[in-house]
Length: 447
Image 1 (tube, rainbow, N blue to C red):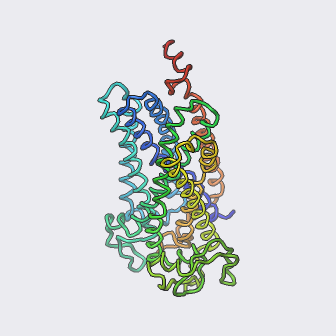
Image 2 (cartoon, rainbow, N blue to C red; image 1 turned 60 degrees about the vertical axis):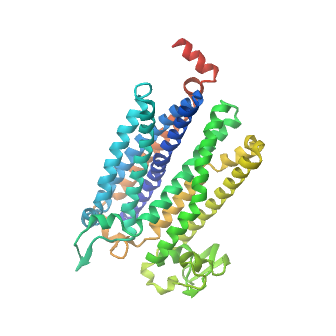
Image 3 (cartoon, helix red, strand yellow; image 1 turned 135 degrees about the vertical axis):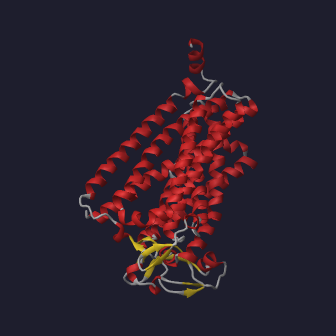
């Protein structure tokens, strides 16, 4: 493994893990705050127990997210010094503000975890809600920095120098809103389905059924918001890509020839050498409409760009197809759930519906990882789109593959620790969190 490949692999691995921790941190506090609100409005002790159970999960994932995020910040300087030398002064503002949001989140989560029966009940609730707001802000600010790499602005590039720097303009670049919106919606979808799937499994095992049913329905509600919002935010993101990065759009669709009324491609195997895609289902004119709102608009093909500026077409195309496939599956599951909720209440307790959510547990994160692959790999060979190539930003230091192995071991270890801690939390539900359980009551009497 050469150093350039090792650096890219390490960054991809780190982002692949961190994006999961970050998305949980963006969404899970809102589930927790919603359960807390239900407790305050109804007085039902199950919601109180659920809030406490979820808050411990939030704390665990906050800690691991902080570790992985810190590692990423070091990796930017370690692996890409050429990038940070020039880009740091331009897009440093969102990173600085993200640090502020992180500290607010840390303070709020401390207040929430240790504030039971100590604060005013609504102030206590607001602390939990603030955890979600600051986590959401952290995610959006980091996406702003990434969006700048896709749509660099806020400076003038003259004779190889970056001058007239405007950090505010850089932060609020043209890609920021579409990427932040789509990322936020995807995070709600992925986390909602993951949490709903876990509680669906526990309902099927007949363990603390009422407790897990309430948890399942809250999580499913958030999952549906994300699932139905994803096509809308995705449309906004796709139109933004079509305008700013037409070569990325062409790679997403393996669209080689420029044409009017371009077809939307489903499936298929791209052949970059021949400039064609085989075994694909093509829907006439739909790509033109999705890109421009005009069925007859012209969509530029890959062959109109220099080949040394093509991203890896197959990787981008397959990732895009995976994202769409799982997105459609989750929308279908959400539609069935909505139909059951409004018209077939008895379906809500059926094992087949619970099994559907169980199988869908990883779908949101698979789609999210695939979408992130489209964003990052689709920008190649540029680290700053149209300005700096990724190969020119990598560190000249040798031995990066050993760093890759080391960081891989850390992330695998973090994942195992998270699985262990969350599994222990689930096992403690009867004793610590479900007031209807005999174990909980016996523990309360002893104490």
